[in-house]
Image (cartoon, rainbow, N blue to C red; front, side):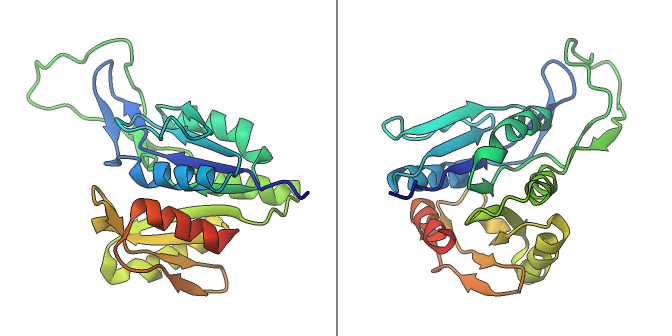
Length: 217
């Protein structure tokens, strides 16, 4: 019997510390990535979920291996360890694009000034790094690396297609900004040859998870 493909999914935000109590983050609930992990597990696929600091978690009755991260550096380490073994990597996490260059994680900055200046540095491009790692390894799994693009609906397809090429991934899910905090999603799956498959509009996220896996596997 052919073994079922293994799935690695990232979900949720990163929290990049400013000091011991403050951080920079993206506004992400992790609900879409969790829905994808639950859909994979219900397909009886070996599923690992790398989950950021979220208030929601996957259904505990499902066989999902959940590993938590806080920062982009944490997630980078988990991806280095687990991505090479996965047949399909779905990068749904909302990694902060920038982080404080000189955080003070062991102290609290006093509120005794009218203003402060933070110097930010780029976080690692984890999507591009995973895609490059897999290309260099020569691995050709069935699904490859799937990225997400959250953009304004007026230039959604254009910007998602550009991101797909820039990151070197095998496909990208383009979804509008309205997806944030919403129970439904209207999205498009785009491939490097510009083939674009629209998902049924306003799908509840659990149903979208099942739809996406059906397209990729």
